[in-house]
Amino acid sequence: MPKDAARYGIRATRPEDLAHCVADALANGCIVGVYETSGRGGTLADPRGLEAHVLIEREGARGFVPAVMAERAPELFAATPTWTVASARVEWRDRLGAMQGLEPDVAVRPVAEGDAPRLHSILRAFAAITGLPALLERRFEDDGGTAVVSPEDALRRFLATGLDSLVLDGVLFQKCHELHQPVPHARLAV
Image (tube, rainbow, N blue to C red; front, top):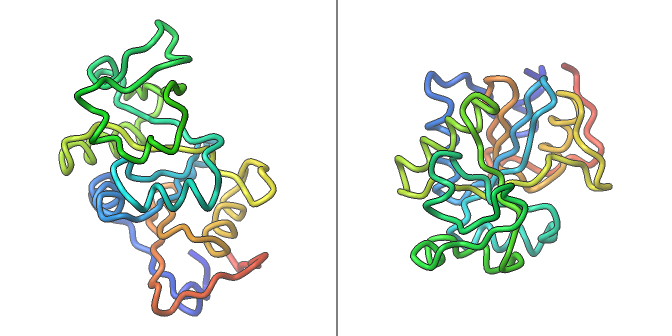
């Protein structure tokens, strides 16, 4: 944790049930960055609501895909066998409201527990809270479109943008918006 996190209006915790904390934040409109030192990472948003529309307008729709629990993907989407093109099934379209900002047919990312255990557990917790086993996901990248490739990059991106929270290898960083001011090109003592 950065030594001066409090100065930036940041709270860092290691919640016992990280997936539930993240899912709850997403269900309440937060935008969450997730970075794993294995190189996996993404920006997550609730596909149901206004906050995701704002995110898509602010950052552009390019790159956002629905990430869905693999075992429930056929329930939500009609897709080709490779999931390269899919459309939301009629009975789910209202619940996937933010997808209105995406193309009608989109690439879907089915998330299997064995392939991405952290994201799958967040999806499972989000489904338990909202009844929807899907999130919007975008590659975690900097303003120039370059992938975030280190914990330091992830923290800088978190501090300099509108992300509300960041998951960094089991630690949940959350902004206290009353105190936090974006820090362009943040330099951190880690």
